[in-house]
Each structure stands twice: as C-alpha cells, then as structure tokens.
Image (cartoon, helix red, strand yellow):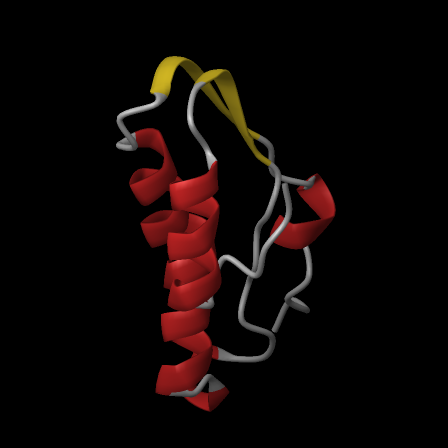
Length: 83
C-alpha cells in the first residue's frame, strides 16, 4: 500500500485499509533543504508529517501488532552543505 504520508486524507485511507500487520516498514523520510533561516513553516510541517506524525499514526493503528522498522537513507542526512 502506498500513500503520501504528508496528506492526512491519504493517510486516513491507508489506516482504514490496513486491517492487520505483523511488521510496519516506514521507508519515507523528508528533510527541509537549505539553511535553517531559509526553511518555511510549511516545509517543517511537511517534514514532521512524513517523518514523525505518519509513522506514529501507523504504529498506533489497532491492526499493527508486530514490529516497526524505520528506514532512513544516509544521503538524506547529508543534504545540507557545510557553512
């Protein structure tokens, strides 16, 4: 099953479709690009939706009874250029 984790409506549909799961793989991550003083509130909200809120909502679904595995690419962490 796939969805845009930042889209609450799509996430709710995914939660409704997921009847049961032994394992949840959260293979999505998003980092705002640019310097902190250039990042908009909307970019921060989208990153929080994808990286924090969606995995928590999925893990707290009644049908998830097993393990949660979060996968994050090293390249995501290295996007910002050093100053």
